[in-house]
Length: 211
Image 1 (tube, one colour):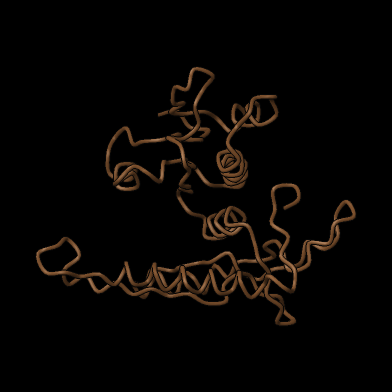
Image 2 (tube, one colour):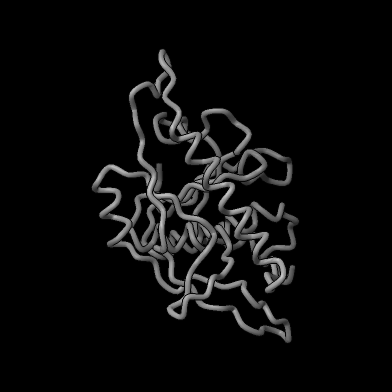
C-alpha cells in the first residue's frame, strides 16, 4: 500500500482478478435467490456487468510505481442506463479497462463515486464498519454539510480508514451534483432498506440541503 492505495503489480494481478470474479459470482447467486414463501419468490432479478468503466494507470507518483493500480477515466453512463431501463441490476466491480486492453485495479470508492456522478444519481450510499461518522464522544453524527465534512477530514482527528475514504468520496459526490451521500453500517441488518424507506434513515448523511 502507498497513500491508502493498494499497489497491484504483474505478479498479484491474477489474485485480484480471481477475487473479483469469485465475489461477483457470490453476489449474483444471492441476487438469484427466490425461495417459495420468501419476499424474493418469483422476483427473477437479472444482473448485468461488463466493461462499463474505462481506466487509466496511476503511473509513478512520489517515486512509487503503481503498476496495475489505476483510476477511473470514464464511466459508460449510456450503456449502464440501457441495462437499467431493461430492468437489470448493474453490478460494477473494482476493475477498469484501458483502450489498449489493459486491466487496472481501482478503488471501490473511485468507481462508485464516478458512476454516481456520471449517472446523475440522487444519492451515493456507502457501507462502513462502524455506525457512520461519530464525534469525539463516539456519538453518531446524523447529518453534516460537505464543508463540515471537509473540516473533519482536514483536522488531526483520527478516523477509521474506511470512514475516511468514504467521507472523501461523499464530499466529492456532493461537490459534483449528487444531492446526498450516506455512510451506513454494513453490520446492521436492513440498514439499506431503513435508509431508503424510513423517514429518519440510519447512519450519517452528507448534504448541502436541510432535512
